[in-house]
Length: 107
Image 1 (tube, rainbow, N blue to C red):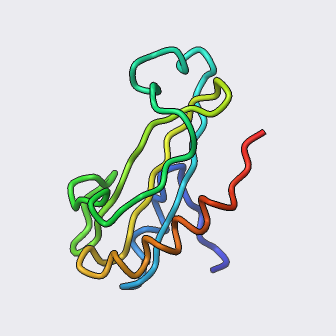
Image 2 (image 1 turned 90 degrees about the vertical axis):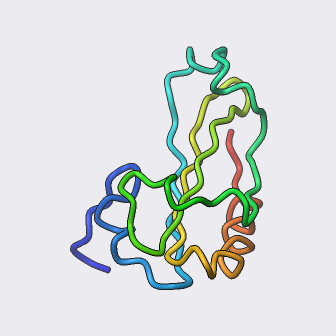
């Protein structure tokens, strides 16, 4: 919607998610961080229902849940952060999130 400004981790957007909506952010970090333990995972991750937990949100919202995965691709470190509008209905949105991730190319 016009007039909404989203912060890197969805501030201003996640509060407006509907029951089957999702917010997905891919945040890049300084390339030097790729050698740290936090970014040891390689390749764009796929999420499962179990990836989402209510406490994994920048700001905990009722009924919603989040997932956060740190990884690297070609030595470039990233954080994948996703929020689903309703934790109980997350199975409806996880497939769509993974479809989005499957079409992602990092070059």
